[in-house]
Image (cartoon, rainbow, N blue to C red; front, side, top):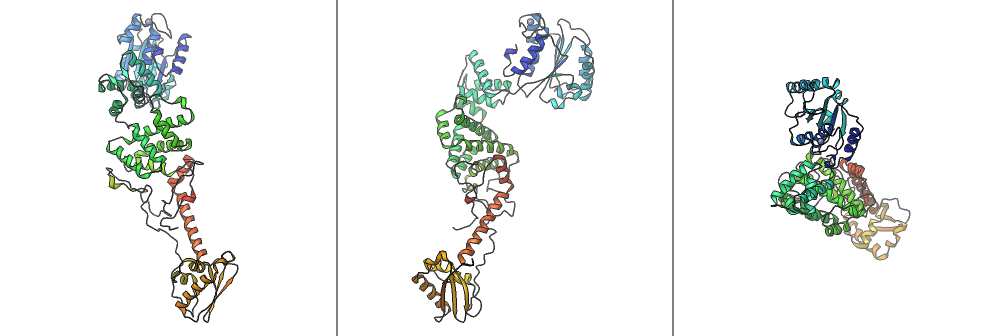
Length: 539
Ligand SMILES: [Zn+2]
């Protein structure tokens, strides 16, 4: 019965119409991933064509043709598996047989499964029959890989693509089957089984069989998860909680716990993506949430994450899973994915510590971005500083022109160097920092302070600076202060310019980092430049 075919309404509708209106084709090609019902559909179609009630979309299921097809004993139905019969001889034998009229049925029906695996001569042999097909022959071809079928064959087939089944539908069907069998099952367990089956009803049924055996007749979520070796959702919630709290240590500690439990990280990222999907649903469309989710925990976690962040984490989880095969090892790939989530905030989201103070100003060598373990993760091999890249402290700082040259009262003064050497503190130091040297000759020095800082010319600060200078250059030193337009040469201004230059360099280094750029472009992320600090900077 077509009604038995779950989730393929589009195909069933088209086939039913064709059968009802008597528009029959010589060859049908059914495509789709494994376990979506291609063979089931092929057998139903065979019954539709041969039912003794006539060609119909609703075979009776009781006539001898229908019952014999169900029992696999119908002489005019030939089922071939191309995966095991790829030779041309076998194919020729089959096709030689095709020219004879059917023995008992209306049509001779050939079901060829995994047809893409036929050899080239076998395809040629089949093509000859397809070019001038005897009226009593029907081919029903099935394949998971239609790309490998010669276009000459494809063009002679009416093609139907069977879709992978959505997990909710698989879970629902499993529930119905189990209810008929009087097997008790938790709804959450069915969801887990459905997701694990990845769109294949056949896999879902087979996994469910195993789960019944594993749970001694009862299907429970905990037992099923243990059986599948999948991640317990609690751990995923803990990961999300650590992310929400921006707690890198807790995040990596959770990751290590998962590693110790022998969790497959690919499955973990998949489950994380699924959990984030459910969180997004909770935030946008609570009615659409899957049954059997831990509603209380969901609410608690959703309260800590905004919708935009959930979207970003979801995208990063997908990308992380895609890149997992290229990671140095699975655990590194998994940790990097989590750290990316930690490091990036979405476009206009709430201000979070984005790349805060953890980026190197310039990456001159292709150093690994995180001190990740290469093989077996152990507690001590993991850096506790999430994004503390292995960078040299104070790397690549521009040359700072503060080297103290030996100042001489007779030679030209280097005010910056002198101020750096003077033992000044407090407001006197600040005054010195905001002075620039106007002139210095014959034991007399003139210093200028900008309008904005003239308040520093308090007598006490002046006296302190002058006495410190006299200690160094002799008691006869004449020091004059004036107020005027600054030429931007004070020690403070020079330091500010250097700091700004280093900041620009750090931001540029991060912005030009290909990894960061890709994330920003793909995810619509945003670099919060105000949080970037050159490494080793002491504000
Ligand atoms: Zn029948």
